[in-house]
Image (cartoon, rainbow, N blue to C red; front, side, top):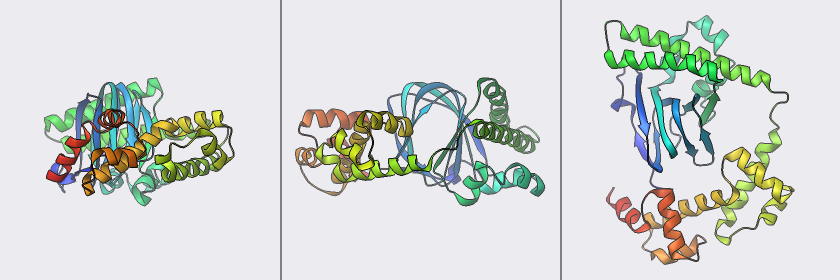
Length: 295
């Protein structure tokens, strides 16, 4: 994993009105990991790709809403140019949207309360049904318009529209939760954690699928499907992510030759290592080493 960039709230909004919204288009294969000291809310207008954290990769779909916690490193991998609306704010602003009684009724027992009160999840994703996503899109576009024009009363109009947006997202999340026939089995998370722990210890040894499956008593072919369904990565994509993260650490913090680093993290071919590294990080190992030491 490349060096994590950091974004600060002071570059986007004032303390008096802690809210910012803008439309962005992401293109290119890779966008580097970064974190921030604010709550980021993303509404996906169009496009296709992946949203990545240090442990998960999620498919980006039109109409999805991402709530990205402060301090949570994340990045994008783009397959087709993605157009999004970024809304940047903090917990206090969200609390202030609702009257106390409304907050208790509408927010207190939802994912949003957990996000802003306990900061209990790095990224929360809500997938909107197509018809609802279209309606919410109009609300989001109105928020962007208000923030861009800054006409008289835009702060009140923005608060109102943002509150409407949050309510619709909460309704979509609650509707999806109640529609499930059975709650998610806690053992699924336990299996994923065991698999990730095993891979973190054995990534350089080219772990065999049979050995990985044995750690959680699963059939190897089922494990492959299960791991991809839960994380968005194939097992061996995840192994490559771990290898590249470790290679980046070596490049930043040691003077080892690049060939030795490639061997240390599990690559026997320097050309293959260079190709995988550039695909993941966006530059060659040599360029990464120079850049990381100049930053």
